[in-house]
Structure formats: C-alpha cells, structure tokens
Image (cartoon, rainbow, N blue to C red):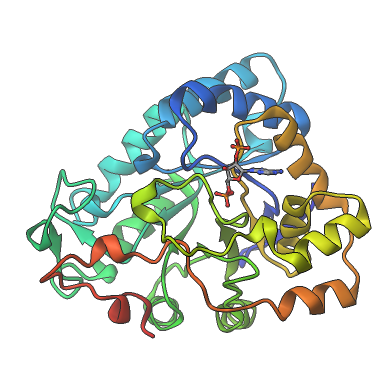
Length: 317
Ligand code: A2P
C-alpha cells in the first residue's frame, strides 16, 4: 500500500475504504473484507450513522490478529451541530466509543456550516447558524486540543474552499494536515491541489466514482455519469480494467488520497487492485481535459430560503 507524507512526516495510506452510504448491515462485512484484501485506511464520519458497526468490524479484525491498530489509518468527522466549544471533544469521544478506538488518525470538520445542536439536516433556515456567529477558529481551537490530548493524531477539514482553507492554515496553531473534498475528473479543482501541494496539506478525493448511490434528493436529473464517460471507458477497455479502476488510479497518480466506497467484496478487491495500475501521460492528459467543474455534492441542502449559507459563500465562487 503506497502512502503520502503528512506535514509532520507521518504517512497516510493513499487508498482508503469510503463508508458514506454503507448501511449498518453491510458496512461490517465491507470493513472486514477490505482489511483482508489489504486496505489499511477506513474513512468514517459520525453522520454516516454506521460507526458502531465499523467499530465492531475493526475490533474483530484486531482480536483475530488480521491487523494491528497502529497499522490502520482511521478518519472520522465532526458533524455540523457540534461546532460549539463545549461540543467538539464530546462528539469526538462519542465517535471513539462507537469505533472502539483510543485515538483517531485524523479528525475533520465535516463542513464549514453550523447547525443548531441536535439538527442532522436543516428543515428550514432556522436550523442553521451563521458561520460569523460560530467561526471555524472557535471549533478549530478544540480540534487542536484533541491533538494535544492524544485523542487524534492529525486534524483537518472537509468541503472547504481554497480561501477558507488558506485562512485556517494562516491562523492555526496546529495547521490542517488534510482536506477532504469532492474530486473526480469532472471536478478536478486544480487550484485546490496546487494550494495543498504548496502548503503541506494532503488532499483526499471523496466521491471519486461519482457516488451514484446518493439519495435521490441529492441528485440532479441531468447528471453526467463518470462510469459512462467515453474517454474513461476507452482507457479502461484499452487497459482491460474497469472504469472505476481508471478513476481510482487517476486520483492516486495525481497525488491525492482516494476513498472509493463499496460494500461488494468483488468491487472492494477490484478498487484495491487499481492502486497498482499505471496510466500513461497521454491517458492523464485525456482525463485532465474532462474537467467541467461539476459538483455532485453541491451543498444546496445548506441553502434553504433565508439561510445564511448560499452556494456562492459556501464555495467562495
Ligand atoms: P457498491 O457499494 O455496491 O460497490 P463513491 O465512492 O464515488 O461514493 O461511489 C460509490 C458507488 O460506486 C456505490 O454505488 C458503489 O456500489 C459503486 N462502486 C464502487 N466500486 C465500484 C466498482 N469497482 N465498479 C462499479 N461500481 C462501483
């Protein structure tokens, strides 16, 4: 398993198993299968509502001696209703209990969006708190305390724009080690990758396969399907691999960490094997030309009528 170096010299496995949308009844088997196949990185979040099952699977694997805790990389994320000073560490501790771990390798602020305590998704603008009223700096101070206290080794953010990440990098005592954003050939965000490379932040690509299993409320009618893109299919056919494998290898070869989700044993293995492919310079150039700045996870759900969040201020574009 290849790794990328973090700003403090630690190494992060470049391929991880995504668990967003993995149902509790399925994720247990997926995590065990992934570890058997060789994955050493599992991406989790409190809001995925399956951390107890992930924790059971991890505990079984550790107990059976399939892998040691110190050889695994486990990420989780702080949900938007726990950004307040008093809520960050309890939320992290709950995740540690659910995952049956003493520490996380990485803890991320899931979104630069604040929800009222107890709200999972906003039903109206009244459920949202403006970022000005509870700024990221307040939340980040507690994230730093989590590192100080040994509850997590690294901290970072998710779904941040370059300006929001830059503001944090420039002000933080412990700088973000990782940003996890949606990245795939239709949303390459070269500006973010450049910023990360120049500032010692690793970029993790989520929804690398286009997250076709998203709930329908998160889907647009006219969505382009990455797996069906003629250029991706053409490269896959020529190499005798699947379109998913091309997408995963592209992400790794581009210098990002990548976390494809699967609960299917055959696809878990297939995705793992993608790490050892090589794409030619021509293939990389062909895929580079597919960029269309198309988000699948736009974040419109944070922007009901009257919300302090708009698509413009969320992404700073
Ligand atoms: P499944 O879990 O049944 O394998 P993303 O990682 O972008 O969120 O995409 C996840 C979606 O892609 C899920 O629907 C998942 O289904 C599917 N998927 C994962 N790996 C593959 C693969 N190798 N080939 C086809 N579909 C895949």
